[in-house]
Image 1 (cartoon, one colour):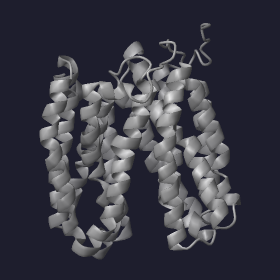
Image 2: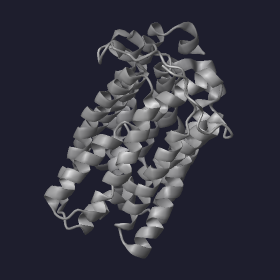
Image 3: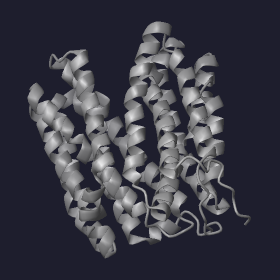
Length: 389
């Protein structure tokens, strides 16, 4: 394989990855809050909107691992990431141009298919570069969380000024910047292409034991993501206060990503997972029992641990996967460990909240309690430094 020339030798590798994460998560921050409003503006009924979103999620679960396997087989995931982001730049515009349920359903499935590998491939490349070049993965990943907040604010202003469809063009621009950032990533030596297939990551005990932990801990956020705002509105909190509570959680997450490397080094992957499970148990117990604003403000700080600590722990495990399996492992983890579990739990969260209201958060706390003993199984499967710093 010929030696690849660095396309952007002046810009430091950490900054290039920070720009990559900032661009792609800006697109997420624009679409996540407002895509349902765009679909409603295009004339879809609530049932049709749910069908479009569910179909997109199903396609994502299937497409991400398949494309990740292909990236490992090719041997240079940068090219796959660049192509995926470039295609997503165009497919997302279909949400603004498409008319009718059938057309928008097709757009959603196509966009989900090409966009599915962008985040996990970015993680895989950033982890490989951080190991080789010695920079802090969490610090560059914090750029994505920060841009998510800013993009959501900008999108809200755009919707207020120009209507919901404006966010589609903003998202397309963000994805175009993602493709440009992918083009500027530093070349990394590869193992010449992995050929072991989808089963290869499952041969690693640490990978097998990570999946249920991610499913339980990250999946426990389903009720919060789906019904947290509605719950707080019913408790009498104003939209501005609710917005600040959401922002507080992401700001805490950014802080962990920026300054949490010593904690990760000390606790290791299993310790970070245990910290995430304990924080989730406490956080969801608070939300189940009270809507008192000071208690909620304290609980929102725990987002740094319930989400962020689990993410950093998972990245530590995935970063230790054998050469030729990194992209496959990342996409399988994103699809099975996080995506599938979160989707099923989000589906279950509707009836749960309808019957129990805020008390339904006790079920989310229960998921974190189930995760705690599994952290010991992960510790046993890891080499000493990854397990405990």
